[in-house]
Each structure stands twice: as structure tokens, then as C-alpha cells.
Length: 356
Image (cartoon, rainbow, N blue to C red; front, side, top):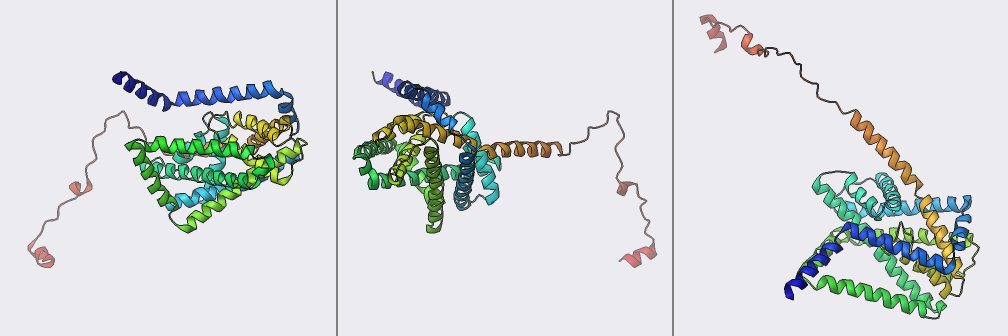
């Protein structure tokens, strides 16, 4: 029985590490949640969210995304500099825009982050440092968002008669504790946690860097919250500010669940549930979430433009690299060094006197 259990555990670990399995899980869960939402509220809210798109909402989303991207690039640059990676701010902004676009249109949701890690320098040491900076930057943003969400839920959870706060607090607490216990249960997991702690100290070891990263993260989150607020108003739903803030945080947490298709799926389900729990129509939450998803896609269009520009520049640079001229097929005698063909001076007695 013991060997069979060991084999099953080994197969499970291999399956969990499989990229194909993770992508399949994202697809199945994302599509399943969307089907469940449509079965509950119909296609009307989705169409209403799409029809609420206009020039004003697009312009506001583009502006807010530009501010959020600039702040996220600043956060990335602060951590990268601490880890020894030279990164100019404008370069970081362009690469971050491109990363957001790739994360949105390609499956997996992390292709853009991987591209950020390898695009600058292909040397193994540089890729390692840049990848650590990318991972720490994304993690720092998630941690700040999680902490702010708990604070907002604690302050305004009473607006939802306590049910939303209790449900989310228990659910999030169980997930965090389960992850920590599972990781620390093995020697390898404890070593990994210690390694991550050392890396975190290296990237955020100073108070100045930590403050900058926190400020940048707050700016990014505020821009996302404002975008969802605009989407909610555009679909015709009027929500008081405290409830709007709480709803937006809940839905952003739902969008960060790593079982979605470009952000779609759990976000719409949680939006409908949260709006209904707050006393509003669930259809309004689904419509607002739909419009928010469309705005998230349209606002990263500059990343698509930069992807094309960077690809054209790279191709042009490769075309201008001089190639080695091919050798002639005719066999020619090797050139004789000039030093060997020059006449050798004859030293006479007089010359010897002058050179000595």
C-alpha cells in the first residue's frame, strides 16, 4: 500500500506542475462560471454591459490605465534596482504595457510577465534577477491589494449586514493558512519560504524602497477601483461610495483568482453575487463587470502597438547585422608576411658602431 501511495503522490505532483493541466483548469472553470452566470441572469446583462461602452468610458479607462501602468512600472523599477537590474523608467513603462497586453490576449495570464523577464537580456544571470524582480513586483501588488481589501471590508462590511465580511474573511483566511501549512509541511517547503524571505529582504530591504512600492501599489489599485466605478455608473447603477468601494474591492479580488480566461469567469460570478448581497440587482453587477472587462481590454491597446513596434525594431536590428563574407572558391596562395619579404640589412663595421 505504501509504494502505491507514493506513486499516487508523485503523479499528483507531476500533474500539478503540468502547464497543460493549469491551462485546462483555467479554461474549464472560467467557461463553467460564465455558463452558470448566463444560466442565472441570462445574456441580457452581458449585452447591456457591451452596449454601455462609449467614447467617454474608453477615454477615462485609457487615462486611468496609463496612470496605473506608470505606477506599476515605477514599482517594478524600484525592486529591480535593488536586485541589481538597471532599468530606465520609460523602458519599464513600455515593457509593462506590452506585458499587460500579452497577459490579456494569451492563455495563462503570465506570458507577458515571462516576456518582461527575458526581453531585456538573455544571459542566464540577468534573466534570473529580472524574473525575481517581476515576481516580487507582482506579489507586492497582490499583498497590498489583499491588505487594503481586508481594511475596507472591516470598515464598511456592516453595509452588507456582516455576511459579506464574514464569508470573505473566513474564506481568505482558510486559503492563506492552508497554503502556508502545506508549504511548511516539508523540508523543501520550509527552505523555499526561507529563500523567499531572503529575496524579499533583498528587494524591499530598505524603508524607502518599501514605501515607494506601497505608494505605487495604492495608485494602481485606486485606478482599477475608479475604472470599475465608471463602469458601474455607465450601466446605469447608482451605488453609494462606501458600498461602491467595498464592491469594487470584492470584485477585484475575484478577478485575481487564477482560474479565469483573460480575467473573465469568476469576476462576473462574484460581481453578481456581491451586488445581490448588497441589495442591488445581480444583473447590474454582471453588466458592470462585463463593461469593466471590455474596458480592461481596450485600455491595453497601447501595449499592442508597442508589441508591433518592438518586433519591427528587433527585425530591423537583425537585418542590419553585418554578415561574414563567404570565402572564394578559388584557392589562392597564402600572402607572405611583409616582414619576411623585406631585405635584411647587412651590418658593416661602421653600422655596428652607430647601433651599439
